[in-house]
Amino acid sequence: MRAVPVDENMAVIKKVGVIGAGQMGNGIAHVAAVAGFDVVLNDVSGDRLKSGMATINGNLSRQVAKNVITEDVKAKALGRIALTETLEGLADCDLVIETAVEKEEVKRKLFHDLCAVLKPEALIASNTSSISITRLASTTDRPERFIGIHFMNPVPLMELVELIRGIATDDFTFEAAKEFVNALGKQVAVSEDFPAFIVNRILLPMINEAIYTLYEGVGNVEAIDAAMKLGAHHPMGPLELADFIGLDTCLSIMQVLHEGLADSKYRPCPLLVKYVEAGWLGRKTQRGFYDYRGAKPVPTR
Ligand code: NAD
Image (cartoon, rainbow, N blue to C red; front, top):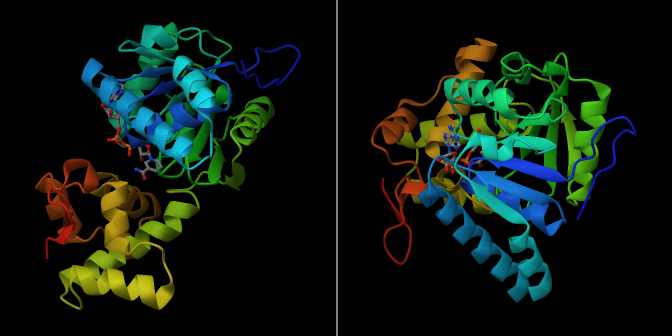
């Protein structure tokens, strides 16, 4: 079993709880289990957990096929992941990482309920893309043991993790989180606690501008994505990337930037709002700026 030793007086991180078995949660469970941590994955229903585990299984198999890991590592990693539909199931974790939807009221309620059952010395982290860590920490009984651990999507492939201290986060928590991230084989970038941190502060306004470019008829979906892939050497076009991130998550991040920085340059594009209102959230709902229901993605505009 993997353990991050942090302080002789404190518990080590051996068991990691993950709240939310969506694209980020299942990725975090995957990399933590491969690194040797015991993982408890939580979601609101057995179906969500089942689908999260199916994704982990598929992604581990892909890593085996590419010789990134062996069959033995895959089997051991799967054996380290336990599932629970209740927060009580996370009570004895040393670190709990929250990866539920990007809605502040959902996260606030989760942290409130989690603190009632989680052992007092455990650390709590949020994988939020944009919400203030200081504000989320204030909803817990342990703001000094609360930190932002912001993974990138897809978690098994991306090297970077942003660490964000809230105003109260203590050095112990910061060092423990850093060691944990390094134990996963990932690099840390430290960001101050300002809306959307570093990566999304830069990336999301670019995606939003691409959506304005579509909205104003400057180019169609294909032209905009081809322009940025071939003209700026981006590995994915901005609209393809928006579908990959999830249009609801993109909109939430733009709203946090707009409200948090009170600058009109961050106003979410009305076309992004319309797609979200339609429930066209990108790949996860099979429709966004592209329609994924057929063999090949087809632009929807
Ligand atoms: P997702 O929609 O794929 O998954 C969210 C999961 O949380 C769902 O399975 C849902 O059932 C579950 N959930 C909702 N409420 C819950 C509750 N009360 N208890 C337990 N589970 C609950 O979303 P995602 O893309 O995985 O994003 C999750 C978080 O990670 C968000 O805060 C998002 O901003 C952040 N994030 C996303 C990306 C990205 O590219 N998608 C990147 C970095 C961080």
